[in-house]
Image (cartoon, rainbow, N blue to C red; front, side):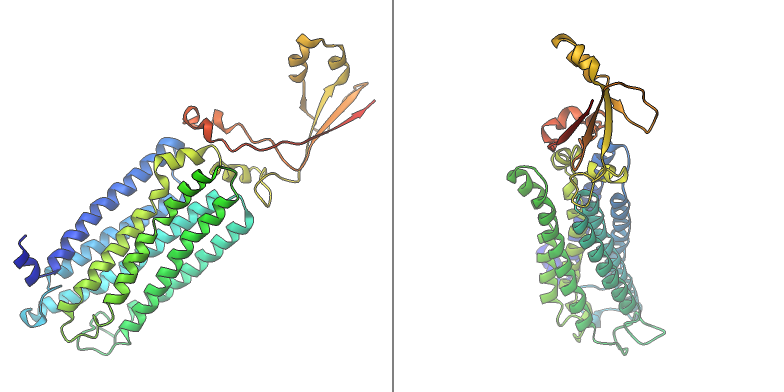
Length: 372
């Protein structure tokens, strides 16, 4: 492609960058899913949301390609009426798919955060943000669907429409704000995790990669102010379309960054397992143990009679006390309260040999009451 070609038809720049980013998106999602499947042998809800975002992103890239082939970046007086119609219809479809892509990409990040955090207050904040993002997306889809006078709501050239510039300003400003929250919220989540500050910074930086999306969105906001009100929209809208492609694809790519293998290995034996602990009722409101207690029994006579060489065998006789009739002369009750020793997830993790240095240790307190 020569410089003359791109100057005469800048739509070709949009085409090349769109398909380059499209390939990167597929590689990023593929790497994410491969990492998740290799380490846990299952896909989570956040993975499904990422796949849905990938599907909408692929459809949007296809719709934008149709718009490019029908005059995006070219002067409107050089196009036929059929091309102008096809351009408007494909741009209308790409805008709707663009909204859906951003929504599912953001929701995938939130779903991952909800799995990671052991703190109920962080979970409630994440759920509240998810509700807000859903409201933002629903209102945007409704407005974009009926942007112009029916029955040709896709026709924004020579038709009565509401202020499209104001609508896309509203959409992109909230897009920037929600992405900023998706950068800040993981930092608060990591603050409560008991790992060294370097690892905290590394994990937070994975989520901070969404700053690239914010940068592209700010550029789009600045360049789209006169795109829809221009007298030559097919020619002037290409910069807005280019920034939109970058925002969309980077949004999907950055939601895959936290699943890079070094990051995931660092969390597999710790934070991600809190979701399993929670389902088993072993994680409390602050994520570090429940208020439930577990009682264990042992025959104290056996321990008193045992010599130093037999102490390991005595410890092996401790067993759960399950409200059964137990006839013992001397009973020692050991109560674990406040904090619970974590489940031995390393025995169940496929990569336990490689991630033992990342185990998040917890202090276990014991109160021993002896009944003669």
